Image (tube, rainbow, N blue to C red; front, side, top):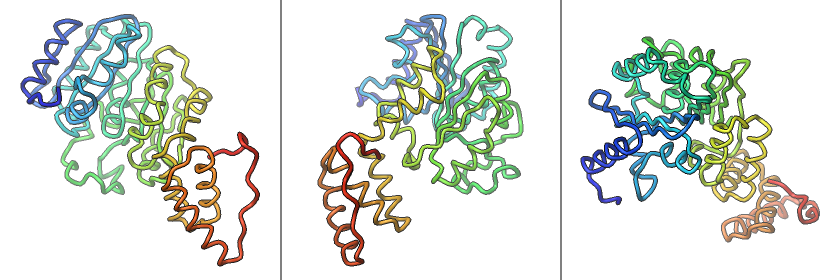
Length: 314
């Protein structure tokens, strides 16, 4: 179904809305898709490009994730990276509050990554007591507060001072929040620090890199994590248990190896590569290990004896 044009794709969303709840355009560049399936609601913020590139059926991630568990889903869709800063989106959430929409659900979970993670935090204030899961979110792009973030210069015209504006303040109404980010990504880490609240857990995950959501998906961590959040069972300990899947995820291991190489830590990088070769194989890590061992031998540095199988970790 990847050959659908935009009109056919939008018609598909409208049909899904008619079957399971509703599809509602919000101005010219945003929309909402609601599926009414049960007393738990997952609210996701997604972009058209991400949805269309994700799966063959080109359905929103939140809509698909909740279908098997019979959870309700509300997907906010943006045509591009708008941070959902649009008066029609403000008005939509205002209407949901006025209608006590969120009060119909036993549990509400908000989710997003990057610009969508900002939106998940910002609009969670509409559902006090919600759980909010964010991956590398921005706190704001307002120059007065985050002028140090130079990644989105073309988006500086967006107004982050109006309603639902400063995401960290909007988190005050949440029952709990989780911010997942790579502390080596300096700007992501600075935004994460702004999100710190007593009920918000900061979860620094070295090795995720700048594409944290994609790496967590490859680890098969993202969907179980959100399922746990919807079940009311997600906490820091559960997240770190799920995150152990990183040990078998090639992209994570490659990110970690590159970070050690860039930091000039050949001894540690060699130990990492040896660990990966023993557990998973892979010519890339084997070749890199050979290079590192030769370099260390020239320096008169020997690697320690390997640990017994099962005792090594990455």
